[in-house]
Length: 186
Image (cartoon, rainbow, N blue to C red):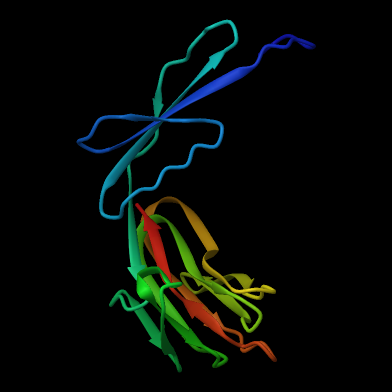
């Protein structure tokens, strides 16, 4: 750690690789990298101080991203849900419901999950349940329509089986809730 009042600064390096491919260095401080589903990825990081001392690389766990579209057999729907199509949806389609109590559930094995859907002025609230326990209420309201939004994401301590359920609240005047896709990571 630099001495108090010191102008020493730290820097970091990050690399990522799809397994079986060479590592690529990501540019910091705002490194963003798209990854394709169905591949395993590894990330590593190291730090350096202004004096030129460089730490050893530390590699995190490998991970694989999977995308489950609204039409996936992994997602079960209860209650009234209708389909919607358009280029604004990931994969060209989504499902939506305005029926209070309607549910969309996905069971997966992994370390994290994200629910993706559209927000807008006619969108309401939904409760999120993980393994039968209500853990969040999400409001999909926005003054303008915004597509492909991550509305809720959950991370777990280890890779294990989980069921995530989205339950439509039936918000007065704006009851609609949608499912565009779920993304999971192992």
